[in-house]
Image (cartoon, rainbow, N blue to C red; front, side, top):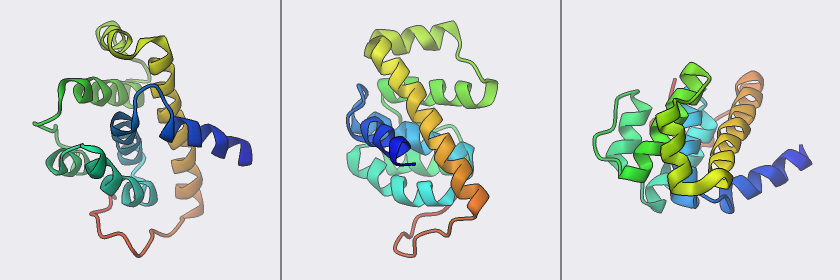
Length: 139
């Protein structure tokens, strides 16, 4: 797990996407896995980094957000496609490449994979939600 943590530190703090978009990808993954611990930790951070509260709420409620910025839409669609169809359309892939290059796209896939891994561990272990968080938690 120490090795995984080092990868997670890179993906969360130093990815080619920057923290705002990384946090959005983390939320998309936490929501896909209905992972309450990751959601409780990252929803406030995503808002702090610039993801609108309305978008965070819409994602939590599994509704299409209506106020994402253009680069956030690419993250949203990329993550949705990767989690739901287990692939990304050529159009979405190209949009991501145009915005962040190959390194950024690999980082985006890495964020989805790393936070899926954490979600599986915490869902399997039934990790309790931190009491200090008051966000609506996905179920």
